[in-house]
Image 1: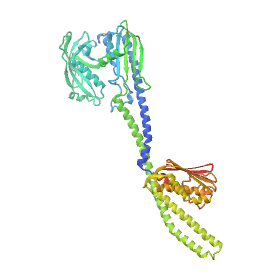
Image 2 (image 1 turned 60 degrees about the vertical axis):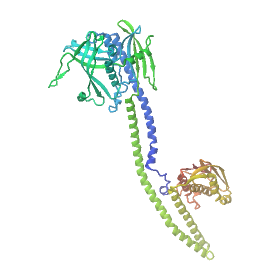
Image 3 (image 1 turned 60 degrees about the horizontal axis):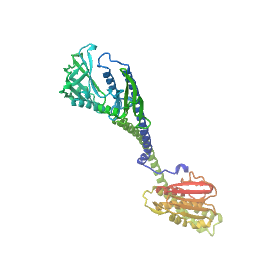
Image 4 (image 1 turned 45 degrees about the vertical axis):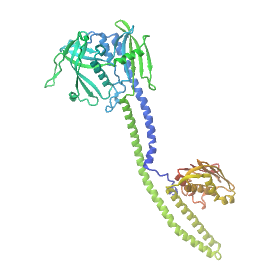
Length: 577
């Protein structure tokens, strides 16, 4: 009953304090998750890109050594190789399932700081074909398959500022997370024999990647006109193209000649030239791997011997994955944030649930304390009356009363005194637990211990107990409540130290320790609970069983902790500052 009714209560807390402590684990888990996700993204991105590079390398070797351009659609084999190299400009850097459309595609893209360069170079160091950016279109002169012809425009060959800008804007659009471009070729200068073209008039559509609303394209297009005025235009014919027409039945009617823009494939020529100048060598085939990230390779430079038109050449490839693009950073932040918010929500729910239970518990404790205080106050008056009557009867019968009668009166007075002491200490414990405002200042802990020990000097001498106080130190505390804790610990030592034993007090700025000899080892597990005296030797009526409870409450008020232990008949009480 005592353990259930007077169980030592933990220090009260609030929802805010509980939540602050509970958030330590979510923060630690989020940091760990962020680190693992960081490594995972780097590994997946680099490994996936390297697999694509290996696959693309095999395709290029196959195309260079074995495929021949027989249809005449591309003009010659070099054009076909250049087009295929242009296909290898962009690669996936994350699996599509991991990407978030509303953040921006993290797959099927590269970054302007990444590298995807390929080139075919002969034994003399002459560049035969590269994946530098070229514009490709398909011209149709009729309905038959033989009426189709692929044309390309190489900005490096025509050297026209308008074409350079058009191609550069397109490449930057591919790098961008926001927009890209589409085109309608209205007219162009074409050279059928060489499969070349120079755009003359083009409609350019700027399309936002998050709003592919093709019905509103007309609101976004702008006209660009390219006019060739130099002698390099010789051999080219200006040709206007018809647009496809749709009938009421949605059947496409094509008038010829028509021109369909395919794409601008490749990367900046300056990037191709730089990688060839910096990393190409003619010492034979080999691989060179470098890494900017932990545990993964994100750049590979390849030299492969291939035969092109019977001549030994080198396939040069330089791939570098720039993992932390803007869209991937946004995706990374999104996943980490969602993970943290989820853990935060779980922590809040747990704290809120505990706070509801705590409020109910605190309300019951307050009711219990108020009931105990009221009961203690109500008992003081009748006890005082009983004690007074007993004392008067003792005085009246001290000469005429028999021994047994006087013994009964003495027992009544002793029990009244014992009960009155319990009530006083119960009220003191309640007062100490409820005290909130403290007057903290520097307190000399040794001087405080000497002052409290002086009160029990006669009791120590009477029982032959030797007491010593060692050490020194000052602590920031409320002197009254700390004095109450120290006094109760010394009082406890006075009562339960064996005769001719010793009490040793050691003080420092970090702890107050009092150690005393006992007749036997004591179980200290529940000794700080009210009215618990431990063993039979501690169950006499000289003790209320509240001293250690009061000492702990006073220590906790100052933010300290009281710890008890007993080993080899040495009882030890320690206040950790």
